[in-house]
Image (cartoon, rainbow, N blue to C red; front, side, top):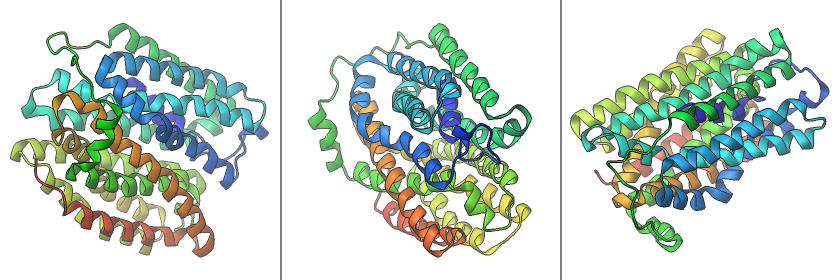
Length: 373
């Protein structure tokens, strides 16, 4: 789905820049933190109302609103004369992301039979991972070749094109009408009383927090392990390539054996030593290899967790289930990022790999509380 690719590209634009162009785009660590946090912060504010919209109106309306906001953000960013205005234009795109990601499960269940939804969700998250790979990989290549402002103008064209294409071809499936009754806000909040939803909210709080931290500070974290600033974004893209493969393989396994819990726990089990491995090795090739395998397991938990959240609620609450899980994930994506900033500044950025290993062990313990669906 084009808009979800664009959302990730806009989010990571400044995290992987190897050098600066105009002064307004020369971001220190603190400025990168603020630019990155606009996306999870916006999610915290509007995720639940957006989930209600998805269940009430279907995925097309929601995605169109999100894609329009992304296009507006992309068009404004190249012309921001000061950092506060750049931050404001980034925030416009951040408001668009929840409208897109919260609609994923509604889209999948509208077009695919029950026996294929885990695989279809894996394919749906593929667009997120492609956007992340491009978000990591393009700035180190495009910024030196075109200049930062021209790169942002190219991103703007992509965002506008994505909106236009979805406007023309994105459609609800008529054979599966939108539910006549959507859950109330009280019912959405009440879903936390469902054991799997509560556990998944905790898992996503930690997991997305870890990922957002690495995405935000990819240059200093990998730089502490001997990876150059120009290679750090490309190494991050390798992580996403592994995640794409892992999401597809684990989702197919989940459909083949009709279980989500076991492949999710397996992925978490392997993630713990892989984070520790990255904390031990040095050099671009070893880091890239470790990131690829880590991506295969750690990032495959996203589609599995999203589908498990949907299976844990009724058919009229798919958007609400995703919204609740995404809500907690973005709270974690804010809190944990700030924690990593403090931890990395105090103890060295290389030590954050060990912090991530500890958090992954916590996730494994939480995952054991999930019930099979």
